Image (cartoon, rainbow, N blue to C red; front, side):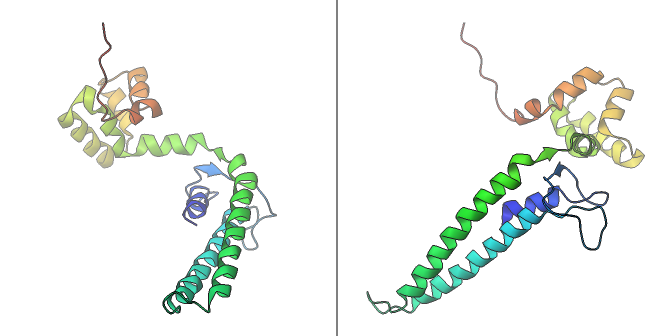
Length: 183
């Protein structure tokens, strides 16, 4: 359910949502918004997960009704457990085949989000230092300019240096101590 909810949120749009990813279209558009494609696979997987959660409540209640080592409610436990296993198996396969395998990243909105986020200054700390990064972050918010724009305008880094420091590979290395190579 969590994954399906995240996929719905990340694909929300087309104009008023995050639109970080595009899910494969699986059904004609929305009934109230012409041209919109609903995330029907994540929605159906969420519904299967909700049913499994309901089954879990029944299983828990049935288990609690047993006396010592006897439980007259084993049939309902087994039925709900087997139904949950089947639902999760089918839902996982449908999510993989009809949704995950066709996800496309929307690079431009993602790039804009990163460049306009003041959190990007964290990646610049090693080169620019805390005080300069704090000043740039405040200026960015006050002036409505991106961190990238301010850093380049103020000649703190070149465009190439900035891009290298905020690349996904560089950001993933933040906080890791680089191992020295052996001579």
